[in-house]
Amino acid sequence: MKSIRALTFDLDNTLWETDVSILGAEDVMAAHLRSLTPAAWMADFSLETFRAVRKQIVEERPDIAHNLTVVRRETLVRWFENQGATRSVAEDLAGEGFRVFYEERQKVNPYPGTVETLEILSKDYPLGAITNGNADLMAMPLGQYFQFSLQSQHFPKPKPDPAMFEEALKRLGVEPHECLHIGDDIEHDVIGAKQLGMKAVWFNTHARIPEEEVPADHTITKLQELIGILKQPG
Image 1: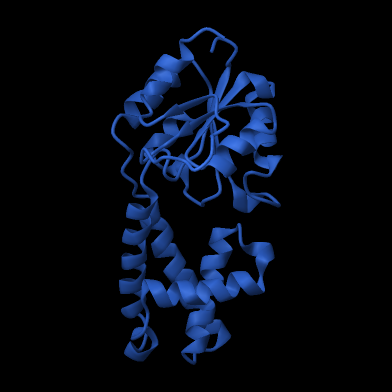
Image 2: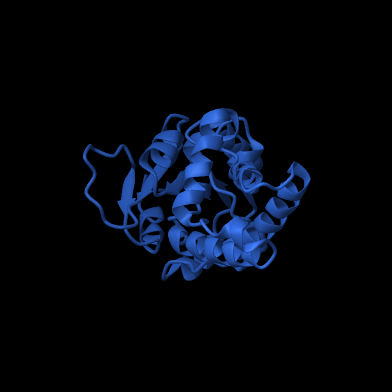
C-alpha cells in the first residue's frame, strides 16, 4: 500500500482488551465508594444495578450517550440521589468515583505484539487514534507512538460520523485515500472510514465469522500483520 502516508487506530479491543481494564476499574471504584459512604448506600451496588441506572440516564439524555465521562458521572449522581444523598453530596461522590475509575481505566494490557508493531510503524508513518471511548491514550506508555488521540466526547457525534475522521486527516495533513484506519468495529471503524474515502483494515480481534461481507480492504487477527500489508503494492 505505497499510497498510504498515515495511519489511524481505534483503541478499545484494537490495541487492548477493553473488558479486562473496564471491569477491573469498576471493582476498584466500587470498593473506594464503599469506603466513603454508609453501608446501605452501596449494599445493592453491582455491575448489573449500575448498568440499569446508566440505561435510564441514556434513555433520558440520548444527547450525552456518546460522552462516556458525563454518562458515568450522571449515573453515579443518580445512584446516590436514589439512596437519599443530597445533590451536592451525590455530585461529590460521583466525582470521586469517576476519578478513581478513570485512573484505573488507563491500566491496560496491550495485545501481544502491539507495542513492537507500533514502534516499527511509527518510524515510517505518523499515527493517530480515534476512539468512541474515553481512554487517555496520551497518558499511557503507548501514547509515545502517536501524534494525537481523539475522543468522541469532544465531538458532536461518535464514529461512524465523519467528524473525528475528518479532524484526524486534518491533523495528519493527508487526503482520505492516503490514510489507513485500523479498528475492530465493522460499523464504527470500517464503514466509518470507508464512507469518507479512507482505506480500512478490520481487526477481527476474536477471529469471529461475520454474518455479512465486511467492506474492509484487509482483515487481520494480529496487529503484526499490518507490517506486511503496508509493504504490498497499491
